[in-house]
Length: 116
Image 1 (cartoon, rainbow, N blue to C red):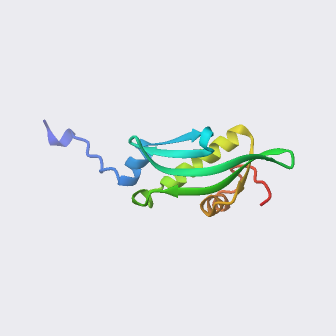
Image 2 (image 1 turned 180 degrees about the horizontal axis):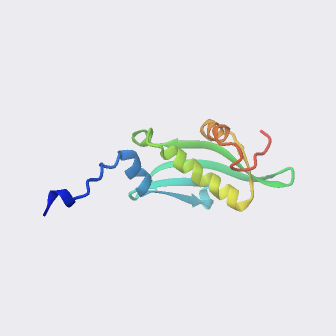
Image 3 (image 1 turned 180 degrees about the vertical axis):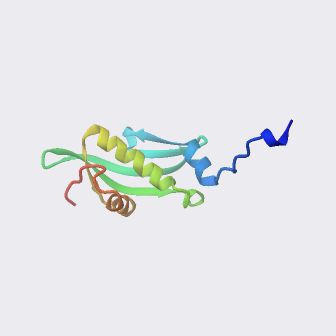
């Protein structure tokens, strides 16, 4: 094989690999969104679904990842997945979770917010 014709691609980072193999799953029965990586549950975003002032509202209570999965953008991936669901369902979000609140402060307008 001629080496000049080979295309060299830089190696992927651990973060990009984890992002590619991760999946956000909505577990309605447990009122949480789950983050799965290669078949393992590695994080959850817990919520309560209620009606506040006549409007359906998702209150995000907490976001938790196993320590070995932090620092790779997976908390953001989990939060984006949950917020996409909220946006698609047309529900308001009330962020009690500090991670979700910080994310929404940095990305205003993604979803309608409910008064805290």
